[in-house]
Length: 69
Image (cartoon, rainbow, N blue to C red; front, side, top):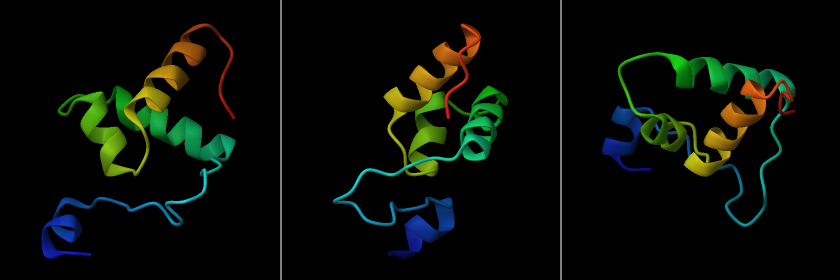
């Protein structure tokens, strides 16, 4: 990892060749972080090593009452 990555707090995926599985607690925490003001959803998703489309999907499911996880 380079110094810029550490400085920005980006979390690299554990195994880039495999899909990550997120627990319900991680999903809820990610959604809570995404709702906070100050940064875009896409930048928050990148910070936590996930696809922005995944986070947007979780948000849509949460709004529909079908919480992910």
